[in-house]
Length: 220
Length: 220
DNA sequence: GTCTATAGACCGATAGAC
DNA sequence: GTCTATCGGTCTATAGAC
Image (tube, rainbow over all chains, first blue to last red; front, side, top):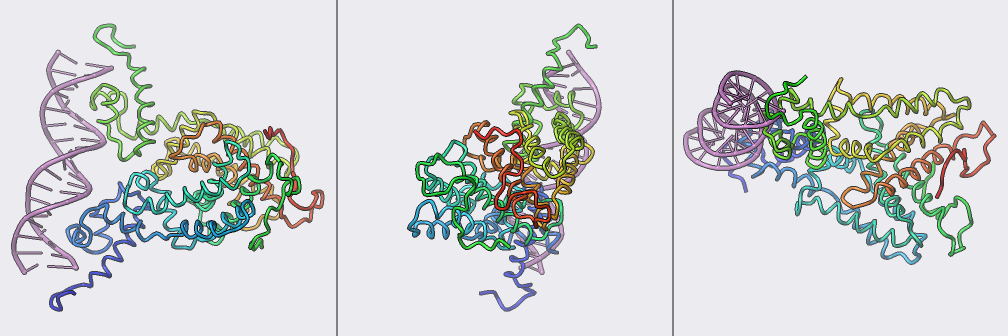
């Protein structure tokens, strides 16, 4: 409870603004290249004041990462509740890709700009994204009947379609809607490529490039 | 011509070793986080000696980037010499993707680890990669009959399949061969997705998910 | 070609007044 | 909650001896 006296400028608001400004600067310039002085300047306070809200520089980073969602775990839970094995693959991947909001895209852009910072951090919330996603990838690969060496990689690429779309859209102004649409189509195309040329000892699928699961898609 | 006297340790070799070591460190730690002292230490010389070979830190970066190839320009030249318009799309994309060697993958990994450094540098060789690739993408989009808003993005994603594959393979030890195989399949799948659901006013293509161009592929 | 030594700038973090 | 002032550290880059 803050003391009612004094010219208190509302600490909670400053903290929130700081996180927003920091995420922006970290994305544009990189975490390491962004100084506390710069963040403070943009906030209209001094570096020392910033230390009132965050004890260390990387505490800002942690606070940002800790705001990330638990979408991977959600998809994982959904997947484990599904009865049919191979048919669940495409819906699961699309579920993950479509769990992207505008706010999530901000996070992805940050991670793309700071790839080394992201995985160089342990116990800070970064693993709350990476580890569940890796688990999801592993469990999905297990659904592929006889995976070729590169099939696991192709599946990871399908899951990372949003990231790829964001990367491809970098330094060109594309609407988030368009980015998401491209990511969806990429994910779908890659999953189908994955299931297209399997050694067909489970001849339930018609040959050729097959629609494996119509699913809940909205191919416009 | 070096003076024949003195304990001259062969300057050209030192320079070459320096570039190799620097690329390695820049990729693992990032450009900004790698100090000249660290590079010099790994070379067995001092920081000041490194300044004999490179006048500034970013001269090392420039030297690395200037070694990059001209594959995009090559593909561009090939494309412009092709007679049929739409049929050239898939072969062109595959040409670009398959122009990846182990050495090129090293370059891609560096760029992935340093996305901001790469495009923050002007007139240093970075544009010798980015600009021709963008031109290639633009000319290829022009081959698509009635591009949807996200089609251009999807095409860029196809071209960047190698990058996406490298990103998906990060922090897991996958052979370069496997990475390249996954990139090829991704590129092919995305190009076909791109050509699959066009407004068919050019009814030369069979409906459905079509093999647009058998091309020179080596589907394993 | 490599060295020692140092200038000069900036950074993260802390102390203490208001 | 924000401030001024400052400490200790690391960095790029330069000067000059060998």
